[in-house]
Amino acid sequence: MKYDFETLVSRNNVGASKWNLMRKINNDVSESIVPFSVADMEFKNPPEIIEGLKEYIDSSIMGYTEATDKYYKAVCNWMERRHTWNIEKEWITEFSGVVPALYTIVRALTKEEDNVLVMTPVYYPFYKAIIDNNRKIIKSELILNEDHYEINFEDFEEKAKLEDTKLLILCNPHNPVGRVWSEDELKNIGRICSENNVIVVSDEIHFDLIMPGFKHTVFANISEEFANNSVICTAPSKTFNLAGLQVSNIVIKNKKIRDKVRYERRKSTGNLGLNIFGYKACEIAYNECEQWLEELIQTINKNRKVVEDFFRSNIPEVNIINLEGTYLQWLDFRTLEKDHKVLEKFMTTEAMFFLDEGYVFGDEGKGFERINLACPTKVLKEALDRLLEAVERCYR
Image 1 (tube, rainbow, N blue to C red):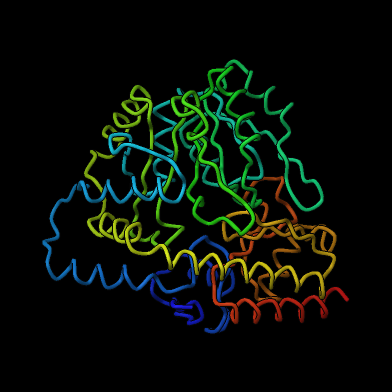
Image 2 (image 1 turned 90 degrees about the vertical axis):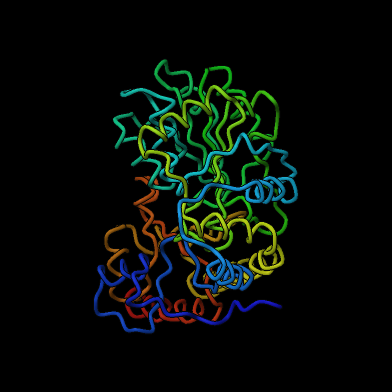
């Protein structure tokens, strides 16, 4: 490989959220322990971004900055090249992240006490964006079929037909269950929502991170009807490990919807634009870092296989959910330990294995764990060895 995916950079005592959270949970962990929870990577950033930002700093003034034509061209070209999705720069609204965008979109497109539909278990900020804005969560539970999840379309349609259901927040690829929804599934979702005047907000932040053998379909790229009834949330942050630079591109073709979202953004934030380095890093990433991404996907897929082989050989009680997209592996520990709180304590005090506990994604996630595979393979293997030793000590 051209790029380095094996060197671990310690993020102890530098303000890294994931590492700080680990120490809040258990302050006795050694300096060598690496957390596998929050969805950022333990990989070095692409060197093109690092060097490009250094050059930019040397030649720039850090004043108020807006997106340039070069920025928009980089974003539009990436969407066309990677996703066969032709967008126009006028459709793009920048936010400091997808989560802040979701808060704004919920306020812009619904009113208090309206229903917002989600398919659970799901990324926990979805719940917060709904509740914090005084809207109602309507859940349609996904069905676990052995090693993968499916949509309960009968239930989904029933919830979409409720009079007060105005918005669906779709997760594609789905976090945490790892599904890349098929085009047929998306067509069914889109049909139901169109028939019931439900706008689709599709969080596609992981859409560049698709495992070999699977294909991602942008919801808005299926039909003109879907494009005009949707908001597509994208960002370079998951793809290139840029979450700290706070940049996302929200694509809205429908001008009426776009104007509502932009008005709410202005009202909420004053619309001061993004971090100057976020603009530049996104531009560099989309123009120069495609080979880095290809090698990243190979590394994630390698780590996926390491996890699968480990559990099948050593802890077969754990059900491995197929990973189709994202770098977040969903694991069912309920056969090993039925009490999710006991499981959490075991992980954080016995195994020193710091994951995202399944229950944070909703009650449907109790007894599950989400493990972040975006780390050097050696680090992952060391953590799995600790887990095995703890399982043999506590459960065998």
